[in-house]
Length: 447
Image (cartoon, rainbow, N blue to C red):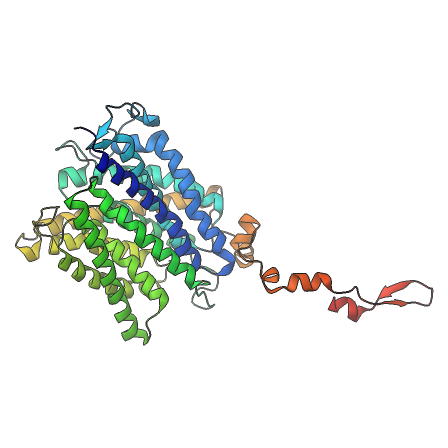
């Protein structure tokens, strides 16, 4: 195949859009935590960009897309991106390095999604160790199993089982959501969970993050077509309408259950819709995407409350949105999929029987169980060695201060109090019987 300039431009632009999603996630998560944790929450996303980028170039791309071993992992033939700078290195109709860059952004955001489940209570060194271990042991083999297609010689999920995951419902969202559940269980509940108020400290940041995620998601889904054509256009439209419908579905549930439609609910509903349409954006019609979106928003709105009933502290609802939303979106292919869409598979409602639904279920259960087990064991190992959970004293003080020696906001300067305090005259001195001067106890205390 020859390189197509339009396709190359689309893939590179989409890679940039997906890159923007991780800072968007940082704002989304950062606004949802308490003020004493916002910097750490954002740092957990940004450090993932740095760590996973190096892993991907050195070994990750090769293990994911460099040939096949047992239909579960690649090989070391392209370690360090060996041989991929040559003009003849082509993937589809784009230079292979464009595909490398695009897939890198998926590898970055997947572990970053997990961080929302463990807000307020982990060491920064523990998080970095987890990202390295989980990305190598879980993300690379799962992404290979789902997306390495080679006519019977590729990954077992996408190539052998024929389960569909257009842009990451299985490889990204179910994968990350299952790991998030494992970490929430291993690390335990935040101090004061269900007792102290833990409301989002900045809903404007949450909305900013949700907006950036929505914008970047067009690269996530439509970019996965890997060409600027009909498939990209279909997935683009499906992404938009499913997300809009999910917002409505979530807000309807909020209105019925709580009597109010909230800003946080709108943002969360949008993300739930984006998650659910990700695996199925190439498999359904726009009407099917609306149906999927409404149900995804409603189901995820109910799902986020399960943590209170089941007793695990998923701080920012990663399990309820990403695990449940990703699973629902994947299963919906077996119900709402149509051969008229680019993925060309009829689901149950289009006369295709239950076969595709079964394949989707098997793929997602397998990935979820594998990710959960490895994340659980890895978190235990990290906690027992270098330490993963903050001490009680450090958690109460605040992870920003303890881990980064910083605070997100300087309230004294913002209100002018710092300048006012520094400009106050020194307390008056009183002369003692022996001729020395001292500040009165009352004045000293006031100062």
